[in-house]
Amino acid sequence: MNETWFQLRSRSFPRPVVVLDVSAAAAALWPVLHSTVEGLAEELPAAARPDVAFLGDSVRYPLDAFLKRADELIAVNRGRGRVISPLLESFGAHSPARVVVITTRPVIDLADWRSSPNAGRIAVIRTDPTVPIANGLYPETDLADVRAVAAVVHQPVAQIRLAVEGGLPVSWDIRSYRFENGELVADPSAGSWDVRAGFLVGKESATASARLIRADKTFDPLPVENAETPEEPQWLPFPPSELTALDAWRAGRSAHCRACGQDHTPGVVACSDEKGTILPSTVRLGTGFVRVRVKMFKADFASTARPTCLLSDGRVAVSTADEPELWAFDSDSNQWQKSDEPGRRFERLSEDDEYAIALPAARGAGR
Amino acid sequence: MTPTDWLFDRTGFPYLPVPAARIAVALFPITKAQTELWLADATGPGDEWYEELLRFGPRVGWRTIGKFVPTQLVLTGLNPEEAGMFAAWLGTGYRLPTTAEWRAGDRAVSKLLVPQLLALANDSRTHPAAAGILKKLSDSGRRTAPSLGFWEGGVLEWVVRPTPPHGGLGRPTPDPAAPRLIGDPQSFDPVTLIRPGRLAAFGARLARPLELEGEP
Image (cartoon, rainbow over all chains, first blue to last red; front, side, top):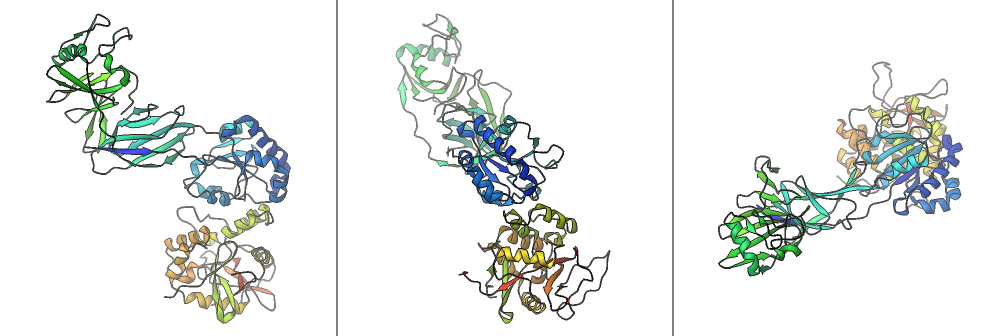
């Protein structure tokens, strides 16, 4: 098993696009289309506002700029045919999250894109409910009100996921990520999505993939590159007052806690009232597993906690809000699989008296 | 094999220089993909015109996957005047070829090797649709340069002649449902119509001068 590190860097994405039908058949609808676009400017916050384009054209106008020049733009674009390829071809490798076509009649080449990577981004809003447009190839709704259009246009980010095939995340440097089913996941509330993460992999080389997933389940890849393995943490000494508890746990006994006056079973660091701790030195480490080395009359602990811990039998314990989870590598499937057996809060890692203690918390974090 | 010095129209579709006839002929008859670029233009012919033509020849998109009828990539049902309108949109100098020019183009294409055509797919001047059509035809089993350009297995194509002013030349795909004897276009006279009107069997291939004003 190798621990391989990767760096995910978030990037910006093109704004969604609202594509307007300005063909001869839609000429009478221009006031409706114009007011719909105006309504989007009121309905959506500035950061979520789409670009505007015309069927037949490849040019995208930021919504606010479009509204300032709407009369001029319709004058030079009126009469364009209902084809979408010029616009979709212009995206190259940087497609917007959503392409919302507002049209009165079928778009000639829309079905051509059903097998393309852009297919999942296309949605249709029909101005005439009696005229089917998408024939089931793309989501289709009626132009009922601006709010309905805004809901189709704006697909907020739901999650960021980072995964390695055959790899298990064992450490990462941003607390907003969490371990979920063998992948790293961040929710949109996370301040930054940039993360450096280590994965335990069975092969010498492994490739990481990261995806930004939107509310409608469409996703975009995010760039991931190899990163250097971080330096080993420093080792810090436990004060003599905490050695008694460690000695008791090593012997498989409960340890008496001066803070709460109760006995703590091996690995239970927090007092039952959650106000105190039997190992005050570890409080500043936050959550996850802390490695501990015990020698004659002294003990050290690693200066950073990790959300996971590689056990002596090759399994990996993962810190959770409850008991740690255990994950084992299945060489037949080249996948990590979760064990039904729960992990322990105090684990012996090696014969030379190195242990891991699961610190109390809901989520693992830190290196 | 020497590289072919292709010329391109504003849609990025290729033309083969035929110095003996002092023209360049389009590799393809006017395709639906090209027509849709014209249609996309605000000065284009409008959706209703195109929808009328599609009733004569159903459309297949070059991006669509699976079995297809190759001639559905070609615009059919248009009359010579409409071909002339498309030619005018392409620019000054584009026009229907004469019978002699069409035949000269046919002979020139027959001397090309398939790799010379397929190299167009890697030419940055080629529109993705032109490259896609070549690949689609090649993947469908077409193995000669004329068949990759619809000179074989295509449609009848309007040419300019003295009287009547237009006729059709080509080697269309035989239609078992309506067998018809069409002679070798190198020696037989163009097919002419008794009554004007739209016909699904007719398309158009354009020609242009070897040099155009303002072209590098």
